[in-house]
Length: 142
Image (cartoon, rainbow, N blue to C red; front, side):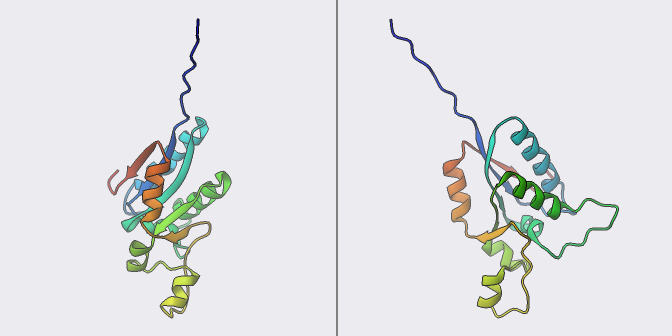
């Protein structure tokens, strides 16, 4: 008699955030989901910021003292769990978000990308879709 064992893979997620902090609930909802996902023992392959979601990676956000600083909260979560946070380069450039490389390329006076976020192309989103078992979108109004 032969016994077979079926293994269930632990789900891994790519999170895509398209809503900006302070004008949508997308970053807040996504962070709650991300924390619950990690607490349940699942993995998050990456967080991809697209459209207005790239504002979450700005080092120049200055939240009022009585409000949650969502970019800092996200940065701390990503660092703590060693999860890549990637801002879409096209979305970032259109919204004035640049890293040191883009600052030099466009001869800008400063850069404003919050660590540990990076800027990359849509290939990061594609790779996340391939590597993860699920991709979850958090849109403006979500």
